Length: 161
Image 1 (cartoon, rainbow, N blue to C red):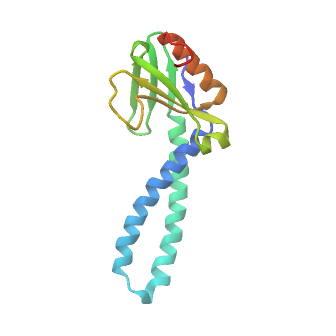
Image 2 (cartoon, rainbow, N blue to C red):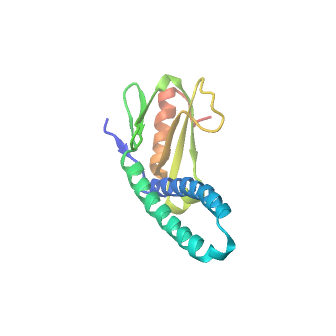
Image 3 (tube, rainbow, N blue to C red):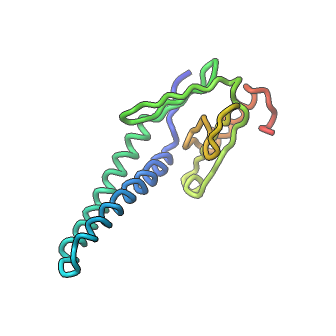
């Protein structure tokens, strides 16, 4: 089966995540620099770097969003679900259908605004409390329901209950 791409709304997820990461880093750096400077030179040495930091964060966030979207793919094979993601370091996940326990569909505020859903594929024996082993960050609402129904039929459960 051919590899599937994410909904275009996934770029917003990647973009916002990158902004949070970059701004966290810049806040730490700015805190260190602010401690070194005196109030006399505040306007010259703080305002311009803050504006530059915001610009760099926006540019880097957009580059990251475009690349993360481009290199994220998933597919359903005869034996199970497979996903691949990563810009520099690739991560491949293979989940046999026999290991899948449940499929959840999530729609946060950005997902509702941009018309997509996230799919969480929960597996037997996965111990992480905050996420699931299989994750598709953004597919259309209709495709999310189709994927959920397909997987639930594959694992032999009706209506995901």
